[in-house]
Image 1: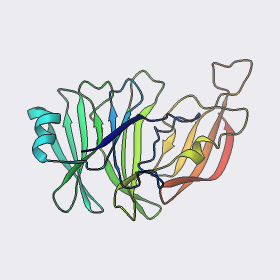
Image 2 (image 1 turned 180 degrees about the vertical axis):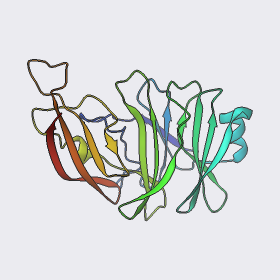
Image 3 (image 1 turned 180 degrees about the horizontal axis):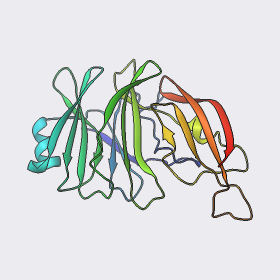
Amino acid sequence: MNAKFGKASIGCLVGVFLISACYSPQTDRYMWTTFIYDGKSDPMIAKMDDAIESPFSIWKTHMEPYSHPVNVGRWGQYTVWDYTSSEQKMKHIVLEDAKGQYRTLLYQNKWCTADVTDSPEIFEVCGQSVLGYRTRIPGTGHFFIEHYWVLDEHSGYPVLVDDTNIRCAVPDGYEVRKGGGLDFKAMSYSTSIWGDPKSPNAPVDEYVTMRLTLKGAKLHVLSIEIGRY
């Protein structure tokens, strides 16, 4: 198994969710990407040529006998499994393909500070099947471990949805410092905004709302509204 590791970038200002493309068309298009969290720092990103694991290794090495696997459902060619150990504060989102091969998509480390009671879910948005996972990170100003994936039509691998257009769409002079504003199923984003030079550490009495759409693996902003509470 050949792997490359790196850090994910939190983004320029919105903090909608941690973002890192699952592949680069120029370099590692068909490399499998696993996101690894401890709930305290930016995620580790592991890119692997061969990410196949056996059910035994997933159960014994990562989860041990405390895990409780749940079949989340079918997502394209994959069966999505949620291995969770509430005793060890650990979660493993694993995809099983049609050949019975297993690959880990997201891994919350043992004793992760983030919650493990939230489960991944499969739903349809804008005519696409999406696998989503969202859990709050305590003590971070309402930020989340939050990922949404679609399937690449060429490799069949999961591709993390790109939120660049949202993160760069807040009007000049304003900024967002809290997370949790994204409603992916409703294709909307709404949150308080900061922008008053007299009170730089407090939000102004305004909010930004965006209507979104999903095209391929990228979110696009359809409209932006600045309102007052």
